[in-house]
Image (tube, rainbow, N blue to C red; front, side, top):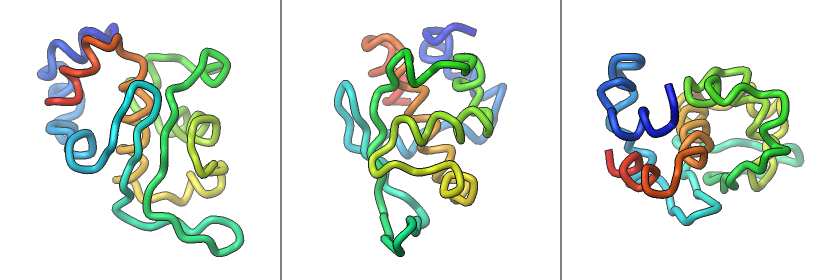
Amino acid sequence: LCASCWASKPSLLQAAWPSALPFPHFTSRTMNNDTTKTIQLDTPITLPGDKIITEVQVRKPSAGALRGLALSDIFRLQTEVIQTILPRVTEPMLNKQVVQNIDPVDLVALGTAVSSFLLPKADRADFQNE
């Protein structure tokens, strides 16, 4: 499905993944603008050096950050693809080992933030309000 299909027909996403709607991490858990989203984590992450973080900033991916990844896999929130792209678009940078140990709720929130950037701006606003 194309990005606008996901945004214009939330029932398609509901059919594909019943627990995906509503998207609480787009309303109460994020601060948004056109190029970044700040995700509040349900479970704090301990980074190397024992630094504990409770939020992660996700940047809009560039074409280079998407290299080697199928866009459809990002929209389907395929775990391996999300684990590959997050180190490329997060601040602080979450390395692959950290991402592999992240709480699944936070992985979905971060992956959904990445996928929302792949929608046209007009559709993105509708997608975030679902």
